[in-house]
Image (cartoon, rainbow over all chains, first blue to last red; front, side, top):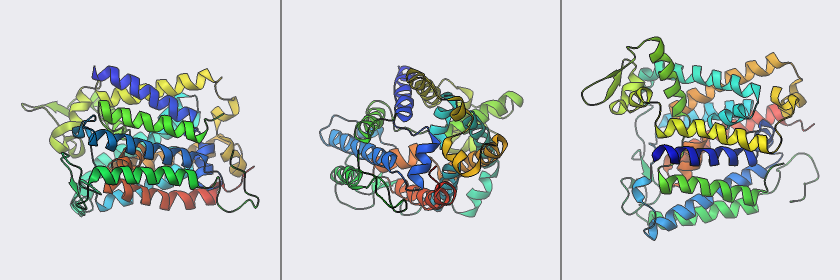
Length: 194
Length: 183
């Protein structure tokens, strides 16, 4: 059963990534260079939609809170984020969109995967040094959510209802998706939205 | 043609929601480690070994957290690994259904040609190095764009916000330097 779900949800995810332009370095590059924010609006709306559905479902008791999986916060998250961001911009691929782009026939994406496998292997070998450095030690409680989600195994950074905060932030992501212009700076004349 | 952002964002959000509703939040970058482990274990069968409680590895990273990565290496037909294979199938079918990519795009994207010309080796060298730092960074951070940024911020995880701040702080300047040229 779990493998059937992996196939169905995975295929849907790959197909949607393809249709929104996320598997194309052209769209990623224009988004990150701020010359066309269409994909940014898509992603913000997606985060907001997912958040509102999940937290509203949890409040209504329809979504199992036990399915939440929160990753730990530590200094290495920021450093790793910087590294990923630089490569994401240069190549136009991140791990998920890279494998999808390769499958859709982009030869350079296969090269990205090869580099990725070597990078992951390099991390596996150097992991003990990072561990010893203390940069993987939890900050602000480690696996925490911003609010306190009832019934969740993760602590909240603030005491306020994590479900309610999740819906509010989700709505904020959706609002930003609508407010965000199609491009920022450069190019002179703004491109009319749609 | 890409989907209008309102429809595309809604569909993508529903996929992320369905993943949490039915199984668990989406993540991808761990599977690069799992594939490395599978390859490594094929070359050297001592890498991952079965214990009384489960699995362990001579590699400290595969052995961490009670050997959960070692277990996935030993059993590749697990949810997360099959999920990534299915993503590839979904993207392939979706792309085929709209007629596939041009030969030019298959070799390298237009945005790269605009700034750097069409020498394949130049593109491949940059993309290989990028793949290296993207996956090294993702493993250091404990997740990537899907696991930290999308799934993480959707769950209001503090780590998701920290990751997104780092990723965009580097990505935007790099993209502006490399890809501001629009045609």
